[in-house]
Amino acid sequence: MSLDLTRVAAQINAMAEKLAENGAERRARLAAAAEQLGSAGDPAALRDKVRLSRTSFLLAAPLTTLDERHSPASPPAAYSVIAADGSHIDVDRNYSTSCSLINIGTVRLDYGAEADAWLDSRPRLLSDESDLVIADPGGAGRVPVKGPLLGIKRDVEECAALAALAAALPLERPALALADGTLIRWNLTTSNYEAYVIRELLDEGYLKCLSAFQSLCAERPLGVASYISSPGGEEVVNTLRLTLCPYEPANCDRHCGKLGYGERPCDPVSGVSDAELFGRFLAAGERSAIFESTSKVISQYYGEHRICFFYLKLEDEIARVELPVWLASDPGRVGLIHTLVLEQVKKGHGYPVALSEAHEQAVVTGADREVFYEVIDAYLADRGLASAVSAKSFSKKARWI
Image (cartoon, rainbow, N blue to C red; front, side, top):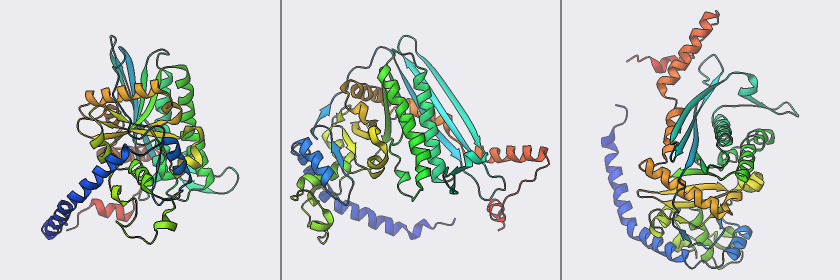
């Protein structure tokens, strides 16, 4: 084999010893963070400090006191849960035919006296130039839709499919529309995309879907949320660090830029994840207070669709549940989301069953990808069109030694 694990075993052992040595210090920081959660003070004043401060880490703006904890209500006698997930086959530069594929899986689960289930999978081939390229309507700019951009385009189609499912539900039936992963399109700010790319995928794409959901929620008992399993964020803990900062407002570079780790006023609670904090603070089934994300993409582009979140303690993990701000201020909708997400996790033995089923409908395996290209080759051959792969791709499939 190419990886000799015997040569790395000693390094793994050293890593384990170091983690064990750091355990006591980490437990002390976690205890300090849990204590600070109950003494963070006025949430309005803290929101102002979050807004005015300049930190080297991402913060969360609390909508209420930080140490709130809420138990779930009983689920409605009859309700529906809908979910959508997707996967894709990216453009293969080693293949002569330029195309890609997006597969969207959708699920509707009805609970109550007339329980039922609908599962569907809808693949879509992207081969036209309008699908494969985002063009600047006011200039000559062109950006190929592949890699991360294809992933974002798939996210938009997942959201649109979920909105279509919601619109088809009975008007008076309580329901939860559940997405997998985050509602925050972080990846649009990690690359230097042109304004026309962001406009098409975000303004005319994802945010347009959120607007559709907002209209649907105004006319029916619908909750809209996303579910993140085992989140790794530290935004709430970072906000606790802000409560320990003596400067008004905080400015990390100006006041603490030359201080080492352990010398800053906020260090007693740093290095702890939100999941660890709320895993200690919440009881099983409880949710945390609601926080608003302060990420750059939200502040620049999301407008009235700003994203909030809460943490939910389950039997085996902590989950992060995200929802639009126009639902976060409605206690009834928040309660519905809390209850139905928890019910879904129970029915799915640790993970929302609707999301699991949507994933099964959407998944594209390696074998599926191979068959996809075989079908393309067959249809091209029927029309006398040659297909070819690069020499590099061919060499990876052939073993010479």
